[in-house]
Image (cartoon, rainbow, N blue to C red; front, side):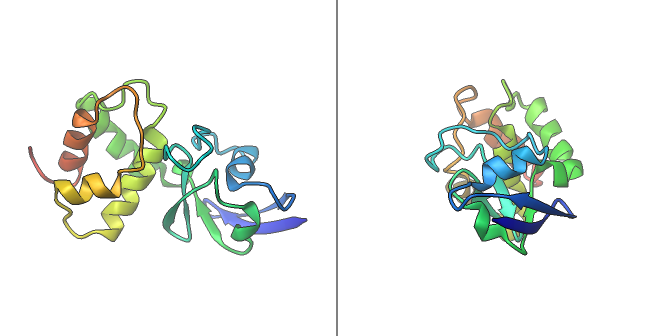
Length: 150
């Protein structure tokens, strides 16, 4: 089957099977920021936005995006770079493998929540796994990015 959707502001077409997941389609379209991690909806590495809301592309069937808008890190590169600088300054990027999914969720959280406190940030980002940082440096960076000083 064939689907059409908007990917990072550009209308695209993809040939899929009924079991094709969105992760495979966006990577096929050149969006390599979307990572394959656990493939069980537990790590957050594959986070993209579907109509502006974060979803896990490893468990979202590609057929669901027909006529909709998908945004990856490539589509929000300016904001991602700004947040990435905060992560780097706090040592929160380490290997960087988890950074794209984390950044997509932080940017979504910034739009969705009004002045979240540290507990709200932790809850919102609970599905983002990182094996390098221990999360303290990431939380410091996120708080600074959102305008709070630790």
